[in-house]
View 1: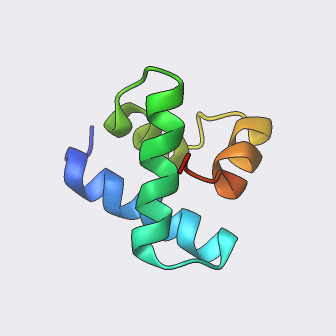
View 2: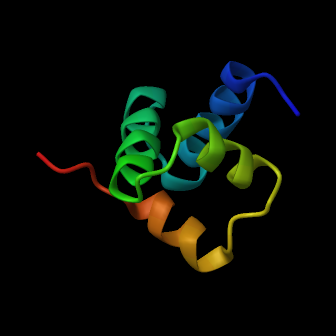
Length: 68
């Protein structure tokens, strides 16, 4: 398995590229998505990077807005 930080960086890049947002916003979306599902951020990042996350969940993650 990839290092957690490397995996998180790859996931942030994927989110940023697909959503057209900066890396900070991509991280905020990833963190919020994980928190709302009571999941580890690194687990969600790994699922995204390895394409184990279902397409419907990727769509939610890409468009996810952190709670204010």
